[in-house]
Length: 154
Image: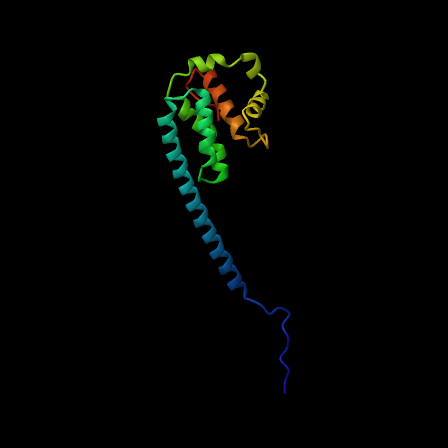
């Protein structure tokens, strides 16, 4: 009886490995695209709601509304975080905010850290300073007022 010579490698062929990796990559790409599209639709629906409800609110009401929207945002977390400033713009632009803008004290808002104190006072303290929807909302309010109610700096 003759012995078969042993191979150093006995496993799936290179073709099988590459086809499997390609299939996984295509699946992940399709899934990521699907999540992006559904997230975008969720955010756009939220913007319409904020525009509609923002007209009857003051600036603090807009902050409350946007933070509530952020909590229930069904989009990807990073997209929800990035949309806070845009959401504030949609809420703020629905009404004249001259009175609210006049309440912002230039000596206080000139220091960038003021937002963290305001958020802490209102009970929505920032856990991470780089990802803080409350701070982003107040920065958007400040930016909206500095641009004569025309835009929000992203």
